[in-house]
Length: 256
Image (cartoon, rainbow, N blue to C red; front, side, top):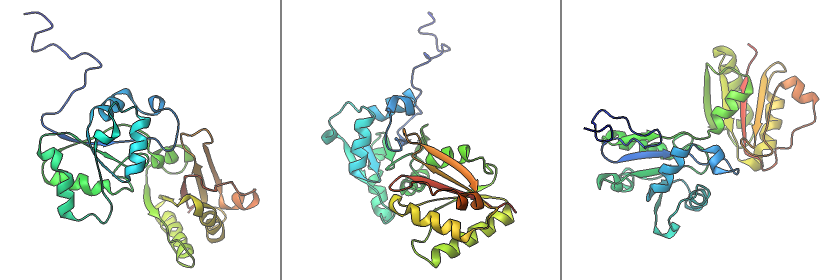
Protein backbone atom coordinates (compact mmCIF):
# COMPACT_ATOMS: atom_id res chain seq x y z
CA UNK A 1 0.00 0.00 0.00
CA UNK A 2 1.41 3.37 -1.00
CA UNK A 3 1.84 6.27 1.41
CA UNK A 4 -0.86 8.15 -0.49
CA UNK A 5 -3.46 5.46 0.29
CA UNK A 6 -2.22 4.38 3.72
CA UNK A 7 -4.82 4.92 6.49
CA UNK A 8 -2.04 6.28 8.70
CA UNK A 9 -0.82 8.91 6.23
CA UNK A 10 -1.13 12.51 7.42
CA UNK A 11 -3.14 15.13 5.51
CA UNK A 12 -1.29 17.81 3.64
CA UNK A 13 -0.49 20.89 5.80
CA UNK A 14 -3.08 23.05 4.01
CA UNK A 15 -5.80 20.39 3.93
CA UNK A 16 -8.86 21.52 5.92
CA UNK A 17 -9.89 19.08 8.66
CA UNK A 18 -13.65 18.81 8.95
CA UNK A 19 -15.52 17.40 11.93
CA UNK A 20 -18.19 14.79 11.05
CA UNK A 21 -21.57 16.32 10.34
CA UNK A 22 -22.54 19.96 9.81
CA UNK A 23 -21.04 22.70 11.94
CA UNK A 24 -21.95 26.19 13.08
CA UNK A 25 -18.95 28.34 12.18
CA UNK A 26 -18.32 31.58 14.08
CA UNK A 27 -16.85 33.85 11.42
CA UNK A 28 -14.79 36.91 12.41
CA UNK A 29 -14.68 39.85 10.05
CA UNK A 30 -12.75 43.11 9.92
CA UNK A 31 -13.13 46.04 12.32
CA UNK A 32 -13.68 48.60 9.60
CA UNK A 33 -11.04 48.36 6.89
CA UNK A 34 -7.69 46.94 5.90
CA UNK A 35 -6.89 43.97 3.74
CA UNK A 36 -8.73 40.73 4.51
CA UNK A 37 -5.68 38.58 3.79
CA UNK A 38 -3.62 40.54 6.32
CA UNK A 39 -6.25 40.38 9.09
CA UNK A 40 -7.74 36.90 8.70
CA UNK A 41 -5.89 33.56 8.49
CA UNK A 42 -6.07 31.75 5.18
CA UNK A 43 -8.14 28.90 6.62
CA UNK A 44 -10.69 31.35 8.03
CA UNK A 45 -11.04 32.97 4.60
CA UNK A 46 -11.34 29.56 2.94
CA UNK A 47 -14.18 28.60 5.25
CA UNK A 48 -16.04 31.90 4.74
CA UNK A 49 -15.71 31.58 0.96
CA UNK A 50 -17.15 28.05 0.81
CA UNK A 51 -20.20 28.65 3.01
CA UNK A 52 -23.59 29.38 1.43
CA UNK A 53 -25.76 29.88 4.53
CA UNK A 54 -25.26 32.70 7.03
CA UNK A 55 -26.95 34.18 10.09
CA UNK A 56 -25.84 37.77 10.64
CA UNK A 57 -26.41 40.80 12.83
CA UNK A 58 -26.92 43.16 9.89
CA UNK A 59 -27.55 42.02 6.32
CA UNK A 60 -26.04 45.09 4.64
CA UNK A 61 -22.76 44.99 6.57
CA UNK A 62 -22.62 41.20 6.20
CA UNK A 63 -22.77 41.50 2.42
CA UNK A 64 -20.00 44.11 2.54
CA UNK A 65 -17.92 41.78 4.72
CA UNK A 66 -18.45 38.85 2.36
CA UNK A 67 -17.27 40.99 -0.54
CA UNK A 68 -14.29 42.08 1.59
CA UNK A 69 -13.46 38.42 2.24
CA UNK A 70 -13.60 37.66 -1.48
CA UNK A 71 -16.59 35.32 -1.46
CA UNK A 72 -16.75 33.87 -4.98
CA UNK A 73 -20.55 33.60 -5.23
CA UNK A 74 -23.04 36.25 -6.20
CA UNK A 75 -24.41 37.60 -2.93
CA UNK A 76 -27.95 37.14 -4.28
CA UNK A 77 -27.29 33.39 -4.38
CA UNK A 78 -26.44 33.21 -0.68
CA UNK A 79 -28.86 32.50 2.14
CA UNK A 80 -28.41 35.43 4.56
CA UNK A 81 -30.75 35.60 7.57
CA UNK A 82 -30.74 38.20 10.36
CA UNK A 83 -30.74 37.64 14.12
CA UNK A 84 -31.34 40.29 16.78
CA UNK A 85 -31.54 40.29 20.57
CA UNK A 86 -35.34 40.22 20.14
CA UNK A 87 -35.39 37.08 17.96
CA UNK A 88 -37.81 34.54 19.44
CA UNK A 89 -36.77 30.99 20.32
CA UNK A 90 -38.95 29.53 17.57
CA UNK A 91 -37.24 31.77 15.04
CA UNK A 92 -33.81 30.75 16.33
CA UNK A 93 -34.68 27.13 15.54
CA UNK A 94 -35.75 28.26 12.08
CA UNK A 95 -32.39 29.97 11.59
CA UNK A 96 -30.67 26.67 12.42
CA UNK A 97 -32.54 24.78 9.69
CA UNK A 98 -29.47 24.47 7.40
CA UNK A 99 -27.69 22.50 10.14
CA UNK A 100 -30.70 20.20 10.46
CA UNK A 101 -30.48 19.63 6.71
CA UNK A 102 -26.82 18.64 7.00
CA UNK A 103 -25.39 21.96 5.74
CA UNK A 104 -22.74 24.11 7.39
CA UNK A 105 -23.87 27.49 8.70
CA UNK A 106 -21.85 30.66 9.38
CA UNK A 107 -22.52 33.35 12.01
CA UNK A 108 -21.25 36.90 11.45
CA UNK A 109 -21.28 40.02 13.62
CA UNK A 110 -21.24 43.55 12.22
CA UNK A 111 -17.53 43.76 13.10
CA UNK A 112 -14.99 41.54 14.81
CA UNK A 113 -15.96 38.25 16.42
CA UNK A 114 -19.55 36.97 16.66
CA UNK A 115 -21.08 35.92 19.95
CA UNK A 116 -19.29 38.66 21.91
CA UNK A 117 -21.52 41.71 22.49
CA UNK A 118 -23.50 40.22 19.61
CA UNK A 119 -26.89 38.47 19.30
CA UNK A 120 -25.21 35.50 17.60
CA UNK A 121 -24.63 34.11 21.10
CA UNK A 122 -28.34 33.15 21.19
CA UNK A 123 -27.88 31.01 18.10
CA UNK A 124 -24.71 29.41 19.46
CA UNK A 125 -26.43 28.49 22.74
CA UNK A 126 -29.31 26.84 20.91
CA UNK A 127 -26.91 24.97 18.62
CA UNK A 128 -25.22 23.49 21.69
CA UNK A 129 -28.60 22.51 23.13
CA UNK A 130 -29.45 20.66 19.93
CA UNK A 131 -26.09 18.91 19.77
CA UNK A 132 -24.62 20.63 16.72
CA UNK A 133 -20.88 21.19 16.41
CA UNK A 134 -19.75 24.78 17.04
CA UNK A 135 -16.44 25.95 15.61
CA UNK A 136 -14.96 29.39 16.38
CA UNK A 137 -12.50 30.72 13.81
CA UNK A 138 -9.57 33.07 14.38
CA UNK A 139 -9.86 36.78 13.62
CA UNK A 140 -9.68 40.26 15.17
CA UNK A 141 -11.50 41.02 18.42
CA UNK A 142 -11.47 44.70 19.41
CA UNK A 143 -11.90 43.81 23.09
CA UNK A 144 -8.91 41.47 23.27
CA UNK A 145 -6.75 43.72 21.11
CA UNK A 146 -7.53 46.67 23.37
CA UNK A 147 -6.84 44.65 26.51
CA UNK A 148 -3.55 43.38 25.10
CA UNK A 149 -2.38 46.89 24.22
CA UNK A 150 -3.65 48.67 27.34
CA UNK A 151 -1.13 47.51 29.92
CA UNK A 152 -4.03 47.11 32.37
CA UNK A 153 -4.75 43.90 34.27
CA UNK A 154 -5.28 41.11 31.74
CA UNK A 155 -5.74 38.43 34.40
CA UNK A 156 -8.98 39.80 35.86
CA UNK A 157 -11.31 41.73 33.56
CA UNK A 158 -14.99 42.16 32.72
CA UNK A 159 -16.81 43.53 29.69
CA UNK A 160 -19.93 45.59 30.36
CA UNK A 161 -21.11 46.53 26.87
CA UNK A 162 -22.72 49.96 26.68
CA UNK A 163 -23.07 52.24 29.70
CA UNK A 164 -26.20 54.37 30.24
CA UNK A 165 -26.54 57.09 27.62
CA UNK A 166 -27.26 60.01 29.92
CA UNK A 167 -26.40 61.43 33.31
CA UNK A 168 -26.87 60.97 36.18
CA UNK A 169 -27.21 57.25 35.38
CA UNK A 170 -24.02 57.19 33.30
CA UNK A 171 -21.87 58.85 35.97
CA UNK A 172 -23.37 56.62 38.67
CA UNK A 173 -22.48 53.56 36.61
CA UNK A 174 -18.91 54.80 36.10
CA UNK A 175 -18.46 55.33 39.84
CA UNK A 176 -19.82 51.82 40.50
CA UNK A 177 -17.45 50.27 37.94
CA UNK A 178 -14.49 52.13 39.41
CA UNK A 179 -15.41 50.86 42.89
CA UNK A 180 -15.71 47.31 41.53
CA UNK A 181 -12.33 47.63 39.84
CA UNK A 182 -10.78 48.90 43.08
CA UNK A 183 -12.37 46.12 45.14
CA UNK A 184 -11.49 43.24 42.79
CA UNK A 185 -8.45 44.74 41.03
CA UNK A 186 -10.32 44.04 37.82
CA UNK A 187 -10.07 45.85 34.50
CA UNK A 188 -13.45 47.15 33.34
CA UNK A 189 -14.10 47.27 29.57
CA UNK A 190 -16.98 49.05 27.85
CA UNK A 191 -17.86 50.58 24.51
CA UNK A 192 -20.01 53.40 23.17
CA UNK A 193 -21.70 54.42 19.95
CA UNK A 194 -19.00 56.42 18.12
CA UNK A 195 -20.88 59.72 18.06
CA UNK A 196 -21.23 59.59 21.89
CA UNK A 197 -17.56 58.79 22.58
CA UNK A 198 -16.66 62.34 23.59
CA UNK A 199 -19.54 62.55 26.08
CA UNK A 200 -18.49 59.28 27.69
CA UNK A 201 -14.85 60.39 27.83
CA UNK A 202 -15.86 63.64 29.55
CA UNK A 203 -17.99 61.71 32.04
CA UNK A 204 -15.06 59.43 32.87
CA UNK A 205 -12.78 62.39 33.56
CA UNK A 206 -15.43 64.02 35.72
CA UNK A 207 -16.38 60.90 37.70
CA UNK A 208 -13.18 58.94 38.32
CA UNK A 209 -10.38 59.42 40.83
CA UNK A 210 -7.19 61.07 39.57
CA UNK A 211 -5.06 57.94 40.05
CA UNK A 212 -7.41 55.59 38.17
CA UNK A 213 -5.99 54.32 34.89
CA UNK A 214 -7.97 54.86 31.71
CA UNK A 215 -7.08 53.38 28.32
CA UNK A 216 -8.78 54.59 25.15
CA UNK A 217 -8.25 52.29 22.15
CA UNK A 218 -9.61 53.65 18.86
CA UNK A 219 -9.62 52.51 15.23
CA UNK A 220 -8.03 49.16 16.08
CA UNK A 221 -6.40 47.44 13.06
CA UNK A 222 -7.00 50.58 10.97
CA UNK A 223 -4.50 53.08 9.62
CA UNK A 224 -5.38 55.65 12.33
CA UNK A 225 -5.20 53.15 15.21
CA UNK A 226 -4.39 54.78 18.54
CA UNK A 227 -4.11 53.20 21.98
CA UNK A 228 -3.26 55.39 24.95
CA UNK A 229 -3.25 54.53 28.68
CA UNK A 230 -2.97 57.32 31.26
CA UNK A 231 -4.20 58.13 34.72
CA UNK A 232 -7.35 60.21 34.87
CA UNK A 233 -5.23 63.05 36.25
CA UNK A 234 -2.92 62.90 33.23
CA UNK A 235 -5.89 62.79 30.84
CA UNK A 236 -7.31 65.90 32.52
CA UNK A 237 -4.04 67.76 31.97
CA UNK A 238 -3.73 66.76 28.30
CA UNK A 239 -5.59 67.90 25.21
CA UNK A 240 -8.66 65.70 24.71
CA UNK A 241 -8.30 63.00 22.04
CA UNK A 242 -10.29 63.21 18.82
CA UNK A 243 -12.83 60.42 19.26
CA UNK A 244 -15.53 61.77 16.95
CA UNK A 245 -17.12 58.88 15.05
CA UNK A 246 -14.19 56.57 15.75
CA UNK A 247 -14.90 53.04 17.06
CA UNK A 248 -13.43 52.89 20.56
CA UNK A 249 -12.95 50.54 23.47
CA UNK A 250 -12.61 52.10 26.93
CA UNK A 251 -10.74 50.29 29.72
CA UNK A 252 -10.60 51.38 33.35
CA UNK A 253 -8.50 50.10 36.26
CA UNK A 254 -8.57 51.62 39.72
CA UNK A 255 -5.22 52.07 41.48
CA UNK A 256 -6.76 50.56 44.62
